[in-house]
Image (tube, rainbow, N blue to C red; front, side, top):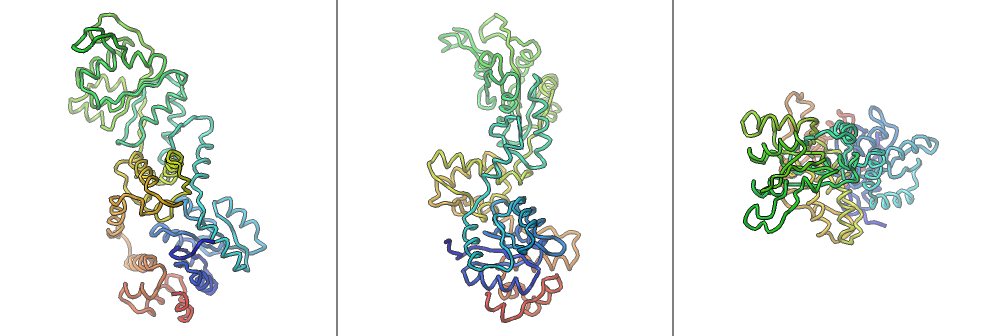
Length: 464
């Protein structure tokens, strides 16, 4: 049975006396207990601080346990949630399990069963299940390694399903590391060319002369060192798809040559005179705004129009936070297998760091962070200790910034300060009162005003 020491457990119950009893019991087992009096407060607390486990009642005013469960699992699916419900209310228990609850406990509670269930839940992770469910929802479309369940990804996925079967030229736009090549591969695999070759070229990594030779090939003797004829990537991609990554980096002269190939569907090798016909679908990608590049005179307008038949915009990872747990689980599974480490998942605190980080390097940066964590981990769960110090530091700095309080009433500002301080203190009201510079009696009065009835002093002392 797992030791409860340092396990952060949130108890959610609108019954003050029952909540106090649970806090006393779980604290005696070694858990660091926080409390919420309703579902809305529980949702807010989960976004402020990570918890290892949530024990939550179903029947509560305003926001009930099922609604709160769904919101919490949507934000951080790593947190196991155990629902408490009356023995006679089986429907609530079934609904809770369908909504992602780890388990349920029937009231009146059997404390031995409760301790076993809580202990088991602390070792539970649902990330792989979430990933499998996502793949099933994609249906017949083969997304390959492309993962995206966030609302902002829905238009992109719908466009992919429509565009892939066609032969249209596609321009994929997005920041570096967002997965533009995965988009291109998904287009290829789901097209009529799927059985043909997929050839990827990083235009930014090659000089102008080398890029021309790589794309079109060269004849023997075309330049110093050309000791034999060489086929280029256009020829290699015949019958399939050619992916030109970072198309915005090519020179003006290369833009002219590329435009001709797109228009005429033929090219000449470097140093050659024979026109070679080619049947290639073109997918290009850029992290630049090509419309602005055209206005600045750095990119040909006619080539831009040729490439911009269909444009797919890939959102940055910071705009699709809901996908972070799924992506992290996907990378964890891959690197665990590659390193022969049976890692079970992420701690809620580690996942909270991943969720709050801005990810300037996007999905590629997340992939690298997970690989690093897998290599460094000695144990079953990736924690904050395996994350890069720069990531943890950035999250801490961001958390230390004052919240945007514009437009809030003074009462709402005060309430946020009280609840966030209480959460930071792990529910310890004495410490929270000290940090807030008020007496415990004043703190209890404020909590009562927020609908969190003050608990009697004796019970409070037993729990802290």
